[in-house]
Length: 320
Image (cartoon, rainbow, N blue to C red; front, side):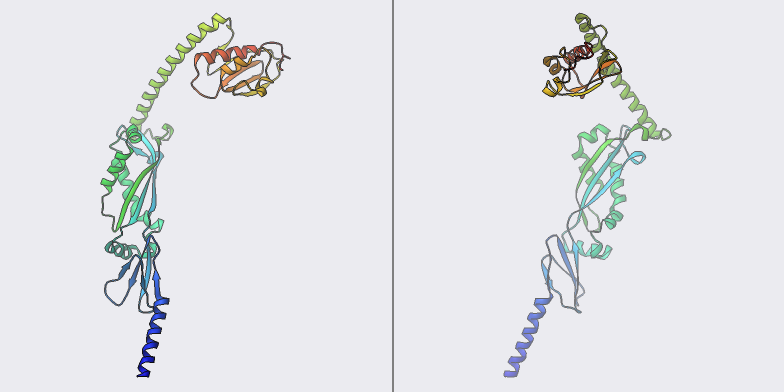
């Protein structure tokens, strides 16, 4: 009897040691596949007893992985309006959290390689790229910018649910812009149509901008005549001739600060500098120029800057 009790105690102790040593826990975002003596492997999301020699265990990563598909330049997406787009779509995939899908993926690529970026790209890059082209051809370029959610939903529909044990969690357009015209192929029929459309659109914009610029020049020209500043010429910048003896100057202007006013002649008043706005004032080679740092400048600022550069015509030694 004592012998049986001792033997039982030894067996229990050995079993407890095996359990303590052999029990393997599974981290969050993982599963473990345990191949045992039975025909069907065990899939666990928490942990299991793995007995050396009798069992073989593999951990498989179930976390979401990122696959980026970029199409740019001559490989860019041709939209419904024949304009080509440079874009990058990021797909987020994971293994389905079901026993059948986990075993399916493990048998297909191996548990250790199931989340390998290169393996995922080999599995899905071509399929996802084809889906981008198929869906993107239905959208005009402007629609891609405005209807990203619709584009995403149609991508999901085109790709479908059967991804051999994987699931598509999300898809996001991370980068989108029109392909530069110099990268288009004029010998490609669709690119040639896109080039014609771009030139037509830009010609229209340039015409409108030219008309607006002409109207502005006419208004400002009339006010310059009223002020007697007939020798001031306005283009993208305002400038006028000054004495060649005027000391060269380059000055960033952002309000009538002490540092700015200390570099200007007395004729350049603080109110004039403030009215001109943020820009750069320079004097070089007998010419004073004021350039703006932003493209949209109203008439009052044009006039103020014109008067400012005109103030630089005074005594060459009149810098403060």
